[in-house]
Image (cartoon, rainbow, N blue to C red):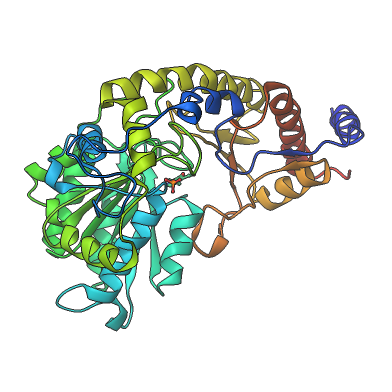
Length: 403
Ligand SMILES: Cc1ncc(COP(=O)(O)O)c(C=O)c1O
């Protein structure tokens, strides 16, 4: 067996591959689905009569905000339609609280901390690190956050300011939180503090590629729990239309909305209204967005299935992998502490993976086990080769073979 594994590795290495499966990006076929945006002509005024060519409409044109309201099932007055990046809105939320939160701006706190589920999104950790905010990691369960760990973290630490999480098709392990999980999160967090911030990065709000367990709109759950002023939900069209070229949305209320508006008023006169208009003309409504996303699903699902067909060659002795119903990632958990070694062996054979540990705060996975696989961007042929390399690398590292 060992000989066959090493021979396969030799064969793959001799192909001088150069394949990058590090980041969750749409493939060019997916981008083609929105090509109409490239040639669309846009009227010079919004439905409410605002001149799109000029400054104005600080928080987005009305029809873009209406699309956001439709996507989030939230009232129009609670919606900001922003630039092309939801991460920017997340950053602005943290910045606003850092500078102006009441009664004490976060910058004046000695030990500010935020809860993040792990494994998680590396940019969330980087962002919190920029503000000197320590991450308190908690595990995820199939149902959402580990509520016992959440409660225990709050009991042990009075300095925790909020939670930053991806409630649907979580990056990278794919969990979709249940309503009950979110309700309990709201209850425990708001009992802990009326200023506790629930920051939801809803990057994969409409990115199902298989039937996904039901999840009520977060805004509805927040309204029923009376925590809309402590809740911020963001998303974007980066993986609906063009990566980094869509439009973004935020839903929030009360003091949280006031704070975000305050920082945005200083830093930007208005978003790109022409791109907002172009997107609204193209996407029209939440229902139409979901139809458009079905076309994405037809392109994305086969890539996941192809990746599984390789991963299934590794029995549970080697490790386990996630089978999400949407989103952009597969998470492989090695049974031995060999993730860094697997990533290195793949690199030696020309296949780039996200560095082991990247999905943990400070880049440290104490068990050296989690590897994030992003199958969407590359072609199916490239993905087959990359997965062959990956499976071979896991076998080599697990069996401690010499390449
Ligand atoms: C969880 C999560 N949030 C945000 C983003 C980026 O979103 P945007 O392009 O809207 O900033 C990504 C992209 O990979 C993501 O996985």
